[in-house]
Length: 147
Image (cartoon, rainbow, N blue to C red):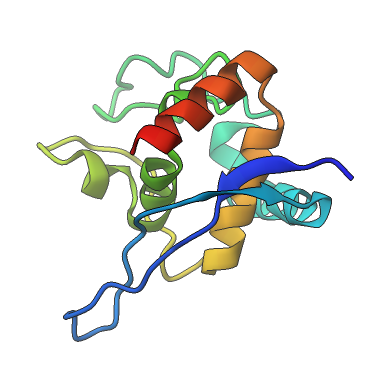
């Protein structure tokens, strides 16, 4: 069975009346083929419309479009997803890009905290990471371990 490293821990945030949880302190675990397959399904249903069926992103993703917002970046090796830790990636999916970047940054990437369950967020990350070549996967693992 093929195995891949993936984010393992999401913890509940305390002190918030609505019970909103925070993604923090991940540890690397091996993802199963079933988790990767589930991530592929969730990605197809929620992510592929913007990020591409082949994780290729939208054209000219490095420049803001007419709305001033950046197009969806690729999640394949041509993009920058693999430059970020598991924690950052999970938090972007959970809270949305604007909330994570701040400073007036505008994005069409919504937060999926009320839409995608925690296990499915992990599965999407497992799927995306399973597509990366060894060099990008190793770099991203190192970034994750440093955080």
